[in-house]
Length: 219
Image (cartoon, rainbow, N blue to C red; front, side, top):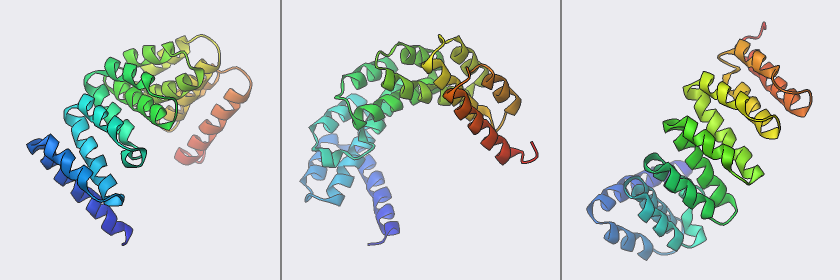
């Protein structure tokens, strides 16, 4: 079976399951879980969870927890928590932090961060700033700054520069430089001067140079 056929079937399954969920959630779940184990069963279950996430993320999360790992899909948690964050970002964030450490938790937190920042970047930023796990905080803050910069680069700049000096601030400023270098090179250059000498400044400088080479080869 060629990839285009599978992609077509995947899209059809998503449409069918969305309509099925509208009619009868329990019947949709029963049908999907009754399929023989394998790719099509997993696809049906993932489509079910995705359709539910848009309507009732709490129930979608419960469904996801009941599924075997192979049926959850790489993006199951991201889809559920991304949808959840659109209606209850604080609740989604709290539940995501309760998940066991690993790829699913990381994906859930990034999804919350991105959707929260899209709707309320200052609240998402405050949440990311308060996270205790440093590695997780860096990833979430990068997502928040990336989303915020696409909406309001001036606001993202003010917030990033207000962070205490240290690795989190350096990473936030570097992320912001990467986001704005192509469309606001002068602003990106001024941000570069806010970074201390060292690896963070060197990495951000490389990002800026590459962006300028792409957008303005004569620069």
